[in-house]
Image (cartoon, rainbow, N blue to C red):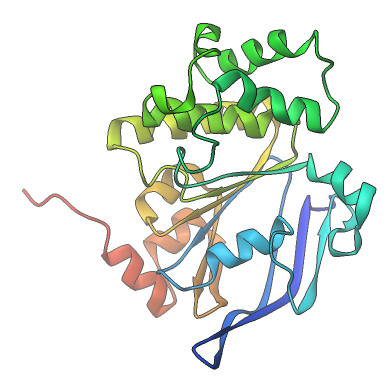
Length: 256
């Protein structure tokens, strides 16, 4: 079966303080439909840059991305705008991801309007449905984004990502700012959505314990390269790279 996403030999460098910094170095990976790939690595390993390249927020210097059988990097203009609905992102900070003056209703109605998936009269009903899908009451729709809790805001962010019926959602440290109990409920929500919708996730994190809960496979990144990739449980039980061993060793353990 053709993968949902195929990435080949991506490279990206930035200039910093007069020197060139390699953010991505010959990165290749695949993602199946309905699969979650954990993208794990220390700070500065390139995982967030890779996420932004996949969303066409940053342009790579070389390499290829194929999304649903199309050359993703070749799309321009109207074709790119139409396909963007198929790839969405949930950011780390659920407050910074929104206009703080926006209401929940307007935040969810905007993608429906921009991508033409619901007319003006239909949008309030669709907004209510999206809120219910992520376990929130439609009565929250008139509330301002800043008036609800962090966990509720992240549920709204997930609802906004779902509004365009995407094939792929990239989650960049999407639960790291939440407390442990809320984090668990968000992970359960993501798993339930994947089961019903068949959506694929790329889950970017520095936390192996969180990735172990959500990801089918994991790619370990360091210095812009993927140094190890495979089934999540296998890599956690027997990490083969020094980077993976350090990340696994950093997971807190209770000693009795």
